[in-house]
Length: 411
Ligand code: SF4
Image (cartoon, rainbow, N blue to C red):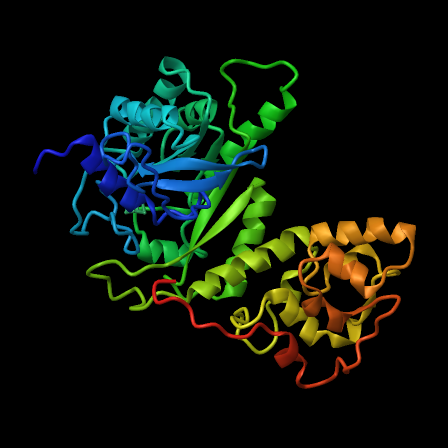
């Protein structure tokens, strides 16, 4: 194998990490303050964005410790049977690289995942070493997100939680059956047990927060990722699994990652990726379930065989199926009725509820308090506004649905 320097490894291991969605990656961003492309330059490799516990958007170095892996998850480009170039960072090397980027203000934190080498325990130990070196040797106070390995010993998961701000464990696929078929070395029960253990530690930490223990877990949350479109699970099944994960393990987020075909794919996998819009609609539906008090049956029902409508967002789809619930009077409706109006988000609803205490709102007021009054107009009544066309109109969908836009070839 040719000798790889740190930049070569970074190119391979940042590229391999891009398939993991669970740090809310918004893609690589090129930063190169010196213009040399040397060690101080990210060359756009591995920089993603995520949200810190305090809500700030931060840049992370998103990378794998190694893309060697002894497992053979059929949907993964790093599986043992995949013919990709391999690389591996040493723990000290990666900690130093993170510090170099941090000192140059390229990043504010690290998102670290890894293929499984030797054993889950050995791999987890190496990842914990990176985090420990950063915290204890380099006195790094930035954000660390560790993708943990469910089969690793509980003490290692606990150690990971002492150094990381966020832990995540990928549930990978919506059903146990699919996981058994596509990722034979993984076990859905062990994944859930590991999530339960992390949740218990986070809960204990909250209870003991008045009496801090230096060896206590520091992580404040956990998240997971589900791959969409690698198996036959429909959107209802995916959202049902998400709901049970949110309820059972208090996850901060479930990330939905559209399956992307790898070279030399297995015949068990679809030849094409799902439309990216499907991923987007799942995020919207997930949001409605968690923050807008919708029930699953309200969102995925009717004539789409358990799938969300790709053409319109799920709230608009629900409104068009429930036209008798509209228009709602913005000056009288309850907060939860307003939250169901297509185009009204939690912030706009808060602003409307506050503003109407001072006097009845007109359409111009709603325009000022929202981002697009055009989308909202058919569904509301204001002091000087009643929609003129009937909500029974068969053409309503055409009036309010977004105009289809041809996506960029790579979009
Ligand atoms: S464990 Fe599976 S998903 Fe993770 S790197 Fe290895 S092959 Fe890929």
